Length: 350
Image 1 (cartoon, rainbow, N blue to C red):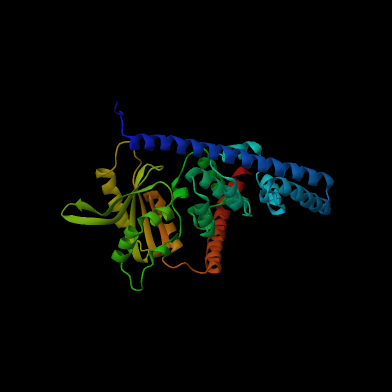
Image 2: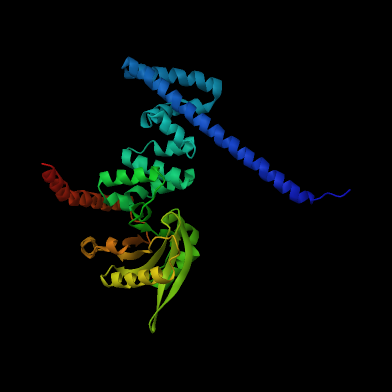
């Protein structure tokens, strides 16, 4: 009697079943373990707070660590117990923790907990859950200052919170998608590179470029040909964003942003809207990646009304101190620009 299917095919099918079961068990075990760590942290925190004595807290943590480590191993060291306490303190709502542990592991939380700014911490938490980042990716995003250089960082804290609330509801907006600046140091371009060199380097490192752009981007075409009347025009890069459900046109500029770039991108977007936009999609949106951009010019041109975003790219990562200072200035300028409207709103309410 012969087998109905070859043994190697049957083996592969069973292997898929076993691997899937193991993944589900590992995920469930992680969720249970992470929630247990939260409960341990909450219980110790409550005991320490009830006595209102720092020396008592240190003594009880040290004593507990010795007993638990002897019983269960290094996972319950004094350092890890303090992490559990910090975990419970940082995420005080158990229902929130229960919802997050479906996507975040204990190691994810270890990377997020040290972030002092509550808004930045919430940003990384929600983005990790939404985009299902690995722990390594999360650490890279934090190290690369994703929060600071996201377009959100240039808005008021109120707007940032509104955007994050939408993300929790599964909605994503252009402000969450586009950033400024983009770090393209991984392209390893030599001195005197051209726009063609930049484009080819992006195509060569497309996987890394897509990671830098963020989840949802799908590559469609390079040098997209657009015939308008008797002339042909070529768009550098064309992407599609699954969550925004719209085409994304990207133009690369070696020079600083110029007002003329707006007209060029508007032509591309109108052509794409007329000839490439599929049923059910939103109108195309454009991103101009340039070496430098003047904030005042961009504001006066009101580019967002034309569905155009401008962002700088850096082919060499500057010293962290320089980047921090630059981004902090951008945030302060954004907050200052919000003051007149806030004062106006207060006057209207009176």
